[in-house]
Length: 395
Image (cartoon, rainbow, N blue to C red; front, side, top):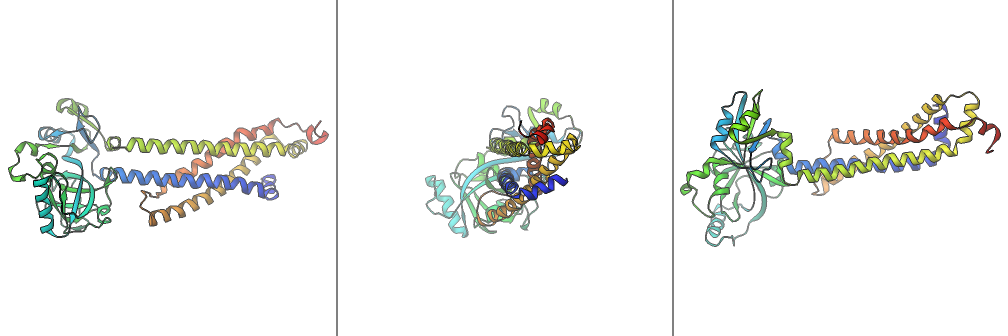
């Protein structure tokens, strides 16, 4: 590393310029990883937090939350399958609504929807993903504050993401078009689905909101609507899920595979992965171009070292060590700036952005690795330098 270190100091301006370019690439990679993590959290954190190993969708609807419908016979049949340790129905519907602090105002808004189809009395506009589940089931969340699910028939648990929009415990939410009233009795963590906050409701309340006639009295609804859900959440310990799927007309996948059934999840992650891929390629090309020029400019010095007995192995190790130092230092600086800028973004903007140790570390390591690959492809030119160049000049 003697020659490498002396070169780094002698041509520090050139290496600083190259390092600045690598640092910018690393900064972009950290920001992209934060954006990717934030988008994933904003899209499927509510599904990811379910304490289930698998999710079962209807066979005809496929792995898609917005097309699946299962009935009571299916989830009870799955619960009775040997090897299935727990199974519970889960409802999933996206709604718009209004939140009201005054119960009388909420009742008036619900009556207006029943009469006119819309509420003239406005509250705090909210978008939410209503998750219906049986109180006391293994997937029912434990409240962070307030009362548990099932403490009252119309009681719901609201995600912290909804509290950030001004909703609080005790407020009533009236769903647009259907007029269903819900009372916020507790809160959960920051769970989202489809980029909107999750609200956890008793399964019967979800069924009435999703399948009941707009503005109707839940007590008069036909029993048929209380036999349906969107999917079945389950934990399996060696169960023959393929046989159960065939018998019950279901499509069971792991929870991780089910993420692709969330609206826009596959497209968002695919787009960001493609951008990251091209940035890694750019990092390799930039490092390769720099060290190609640097090797050409040092041909006489390299030839002199070889004439004095320096081996190709020694020179290659020296050059790769030089590239490694530049890449590690530049990536560390770029990643540090990226983390600092990411912290500002999380604190000062509503952009879905989240920094996690794993993705940031992977991004930094891949920048260094791709840079080393690019450098290795060009530094091998050292082996073709003739020692006579140092002795006889350009001839």
